[in-house]
Image 1 (cartoon, rainbow, N blue to C red):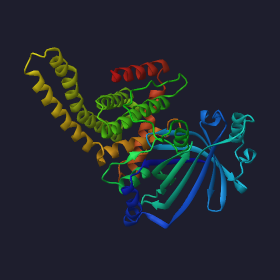
Image 2: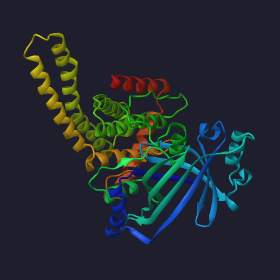
Image 3: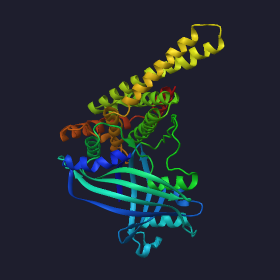
Image 4: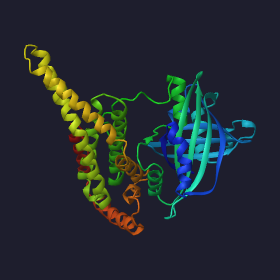
Length: 419
């Protein structure tokens, strides 16, 4: 079984309002359920399962104990897709041979290799869950999780929103997020509860320290088709953009605006290189949104460069020049004003829609990202069908070109955008 969900971190106020807002919008079908979930994560002493991208969990749900294996999570800026296999665990006892999926069972047993399984962390979560439905047929589960993670003698509070797809397209998840928080300001949750538990046990916190994110290389394989290469490049660009949006909102580091602008340039370069694959009205709109956001960020970055790399250095080197210190102070004030402006822009609904749409546009399977699953709110199904049909046709044309040419074009574009 594969789970596809959007995950957000919540503050106390937002978590208290979401359930009522979903009811007011008449999205809730059936009766909401609230229950306490106690989950225990286990691993070998050298964390062999974690290294393999596997989470082994015992969960108590009411009177039942359930054994769960989650495999190779895909986390891209809040959109999570994991494989999940579960079975009853009477008395809360592990039994690896009871894992129902033979391939998963063999992999877990191979990784454990007879080593003892030890406690890593525990989560105690109060989950309020409701099933939501939209007029277009989308069905999803809205879960508000509030609780604590315990590991290594430490505890940390967690408030998280999960919107898990039950039926229909990924675009419906975007619509639900927009309806529930139309004003924007959501922060994507990039880590699973298991990953947070390991961090708490090993390093004492459940979120890595926030820092500007640089561009990272994308390893492209000659065996990949064009769709796979485009998917991987765009995911990397988007992860860089999403991280640095949060950096600017919460830190004063001038490297944040710099890296956000680089990420947006890389994203637009990827559009340009693969225009025949990505050509569609929706992709054009998203490219223009990236351009707009880049202009907003660019104003702050330009002032930072002039103030810190030119005027301030000259003022320090020429202390006898009376005009330089006042100029440096004026530029610093202007940069502060632009930073304040950007901090108001980044949490708003427009930026949230841009980031969420991109997260829902690419799926794990090869080629499926071309379906443009995250359509704008209200777009008719026939438009989505047209986009998918024509984008797929363009993708087949690009896929027929020589692989060396395609790989060199991707490398050139992402390298140029990084500078």
